[in-house]
Length: 337
Image 1 (cartoon, one colour):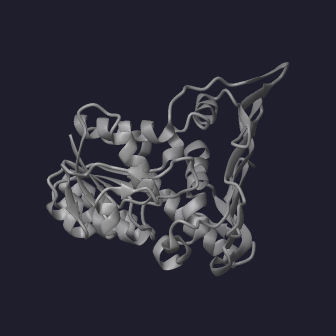
Image 2 (cartoon, rainbow, N blue to C red):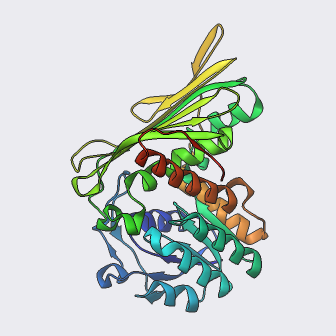
Image 3 (tube, one colour):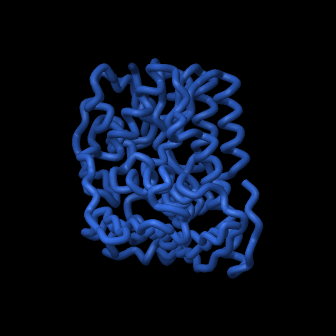
């Protein structure tokens, strides 16, 4: 299977490393507007995970400075779009019209309308479309999904998702809301998606917080309100351009048990009546599992039901509604995705 990786920043490098570990996958084309990177020098790539830059051999790959030219003309079966968010819709649609399957980084697009247009293009062209909502493949989050969906947790009563970090220093485009959607949109889309995966669409939402992207601050605390009485809190964002560490965590409480996790040294832990224990996790890398799933869907021409584009579009729409709710300073808004 031939893959084109379009965009060779932090996430592009992460995906490249995953593809190289899958038998039968060839990096057929790459695209970057940085000549140094396109030549294979990715040593300066940075991100908020422990993934360092390195030199990569692109000698056998087609090279394109322009992303749209790449998705139109590369000799590949599928394209992996690791571009600024404002480019996702146009590049994905061009790729599908050119006969390629598409994996597009999160957030799926800047607007709900763009997401819907991408989904329509997938339907019309018969090409697969998947957004890289990688949390669905993270070993630490799989027990939460299973506990909720199996009923083991019991009736959900409360949940909290939190994710925070310093404002990114590795991509200036992230601080431009017209390109990225802003820090909350780019970062908390993971937790918004996870709330939808676990608990479905809320009936109403409210949110407060502050946004000063130039100062490296973009914070939100949102309440997702359900008719059952369940409240899901999603909170976090950017805390200044300093050495503030990246962290993510969750707590979910039901009638039968509580499950919680923190990346700051706390593995997933289960609490129920009379017992509590750490949940053993597979040694799987979430990014690797996500890429392998996409490749398998392409090979078998199977829809990516585990991470459907419709569900990723819903996360974008909910994230935008929460941004609106924050601007309204806590006003409760109906949620119709």
